[in-house]
Image 1 (cartoon, rainbow, N blue to C red):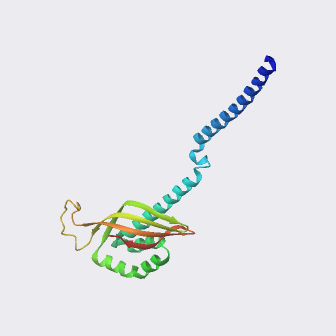
Image 2 (cartoon, helix red, strand yellow):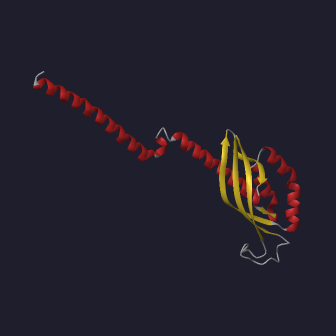
Image 3 (cartoon, rainbow, N blue to C red):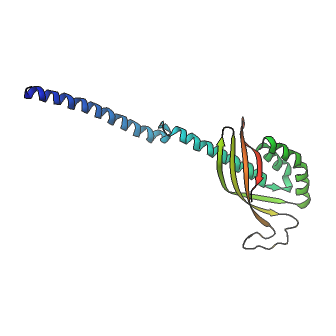
Length: 188
């Protein structure tokens, strides 16, 4: 082979390499621009993880809302409080709650009970199809006729109230209207 033939062959291989490198560079630039505009959700390998995280977020939000409704009780507007819990519930829990709501309303009104819950933590234990298991940590401040004489303490800084911390195992079921609380168990 002559020097000219070898040089021409090298130039052709460098030309091919440059075209491949230019194409790869264009793909990288396009990916960077796409991520810059659309966020990491445009990357195909993050879609499944993102949808799983979004699903966990929906479960956490539903559990937080249902538990907030369950823990917040005010004898002055029990019908609204009961309706909020019923709207956030389904299945066994909805039936049990509906069955005891008349007694709950009567007891709250008689004792002038006001319960205010704060959801401290919501942890998703599992999501399997249409069922999610969640752990909820809540702080509750209760006032009623029997707590009126209580003084504020280090563990309960609210005078005239009782402070309690609770942990709950909550089961949620996916319905056409979203995730709803279908079971609730206190955890010690």
